[in-house]
Length: 262
Image (cartoon, rainbow, N blue to C red; front, top):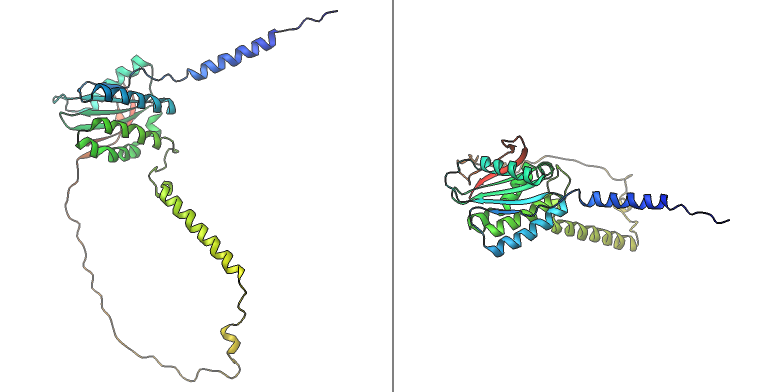
């Protein structure tokens, strides 16, 4: 008698695995466009290079890295301009997770915002750290380098657990190397110390406490030293113009953010 082989169960199992793979691979679709150079601040080659960098890091974090530029002197509030753009972009791309750098060369304003999951992974503190790193490029009108550094720096920061300062000294390579060298030196020193013979002679070896005593003691005043210290007063100096803190767009989308003048 020939037994019939049931292929339904294996086929159903393979189909479920295939559907699971498809759903997981399409959970986040990188946007087709990341650079919106409305201010004509970039060349075609720079746009092409930045598109590639933005797409690479967007896939890495499931967050789209976007650049919006303008040269309109009548844009008085860059946050309104940025918010209106993102509301439209989010609806068109069906995507809420993004890091958006907005530059207005006419008013010399720059704003960096994190939407969706990026609002937490790139919080206000980390936004300010990123802005600190790109201000030299912004002042030099090197907008290509500024966005490139924004993407790579923000991407690195987002790898750390939320709430952790990614610029803490413990995360610096030179500090970790220094700790490793010091630990190595300590271990070698302990090994060398334990490898030699122990000294058993102490000060009490030659001290006869039975026939030794304090004969007399006295206090002698030598001199008095007075130290004066000048109290420094806080000066009223000024730094660059900057501001921070997130908010909400006109469409009700909340974001982390930071603003600077360059």
